[in-house]
Image (cartoon, rainbow, N blue to C red; front, top):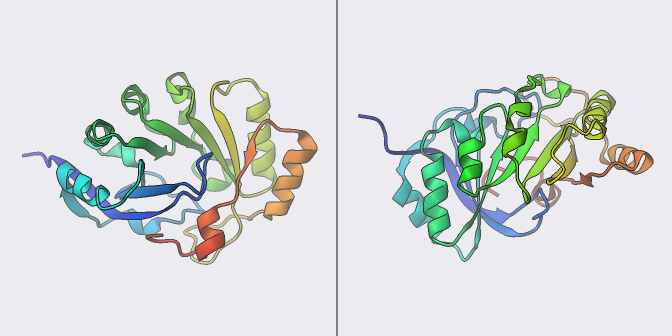
Length: 226
């Protein structure tokens, strides 16, 4: 008999450290499992393990906090077949639901169920730049966001070309985030100074939002559960 719930790494309350909702209180539901192995991944601990929880048990945990925003993240949350059901359950309880996805799996069903999609387009420096994100462009809607994690000047130039190519949807916000070199990362990448990235965005007058992960500025690189 198929499991009728979710495999969960952690559920916690904190401030949103990224996106246009940076600084807003959220409940974070981190699902277990990912089919990518990005060089700069900061949630390697979510690749395996976790605990099985029914959707109702997850909802009970969320209700412990006075919050209106919930983020489903990972790993890759859209790999689990009951994620869309969780979106519906949370929305029926009045929550605004965001989904953080790498865009290499379909977002169609999550988008249909009014989840706010934050799609991370993988740059060459991630070592997972597969190009599958393009198939998801038709499903992005107003209020959704596209994120680029920039690990080097090469990444910046690649992302800049994509932004200026008119291939991206025009109804979403575009985010550029610097990946500084950090201990414990699963792979090798160059890293880029945040000031350097900010200066490049200003120099080229890119129509993007520069963001620097607030949670890491506040609580450091080891942000498990915060």
